[in-house]
Image 1 (cartoon, rainbow, N blue to C red):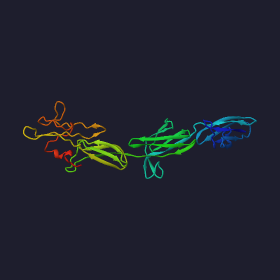
Image 2: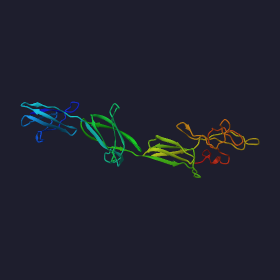
Image 3: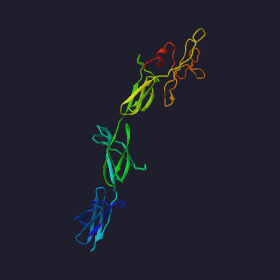
Image 4: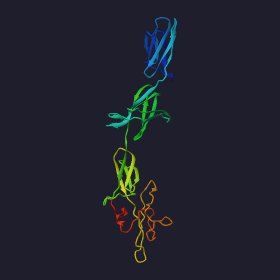
Length: 313
């Protein structure tokens, strides 16, 4: 009789492992399955040399030659490459539900999937196939963080529980992101408004970002997740400058409007504003305005057309 125990690398039993006894010509002589403790028994017809084959769905198979005499022989089998496997589909979710539950996931190729343990150590990294499928093998029991990231998709991090053995199916649904572009124009004449501040606010009231419009009034937000947003636009803050009008006094004034700032940065001054040796904005006759430097050059005739002069957005 041949008896023994089937275990994996850490010494734990492998219940259900199939053991087959064959002679050297390949004929099957006996067959058994390991019990919950990994124990098995095989009975050869006579003494001699036999082939013992052990196979498991969660481990690499193993074959050994065993010489049997006239007394029971103990033969323990240690299987390698065990543990659990984790796999599924990663892609764009369509329909309702999360993690692919009650919905479908359209596979997305070349997504980088990273598996980290509770200590933050990277256990394994893989990429999804062209059909969006991925697979991790030889995982030990525990809780892991599965992270998926790809271009034009919002990254996702999810917790996955992996058993001691078997296969875990876990689909990962990613949300596509979009580029938002637009133009700020005056409500009256419809002219593009440069150096205006466009602000994007999410549905829960958080500011996603702010952009200063270009000379053509355009703005752009990159990498925006799908959802409902509020977009606002605002122009220059008003400025005041004291001026006396009459004989011997200037008949033209320059008001320097400060463009909106994003993250504490101020837009560069417009190149069409005349400046003195010290860089301050000056009028055509050399008069320096009391307003802040670095704004739009306005004459008295077109001051009413500026955003600070009452232009509506």
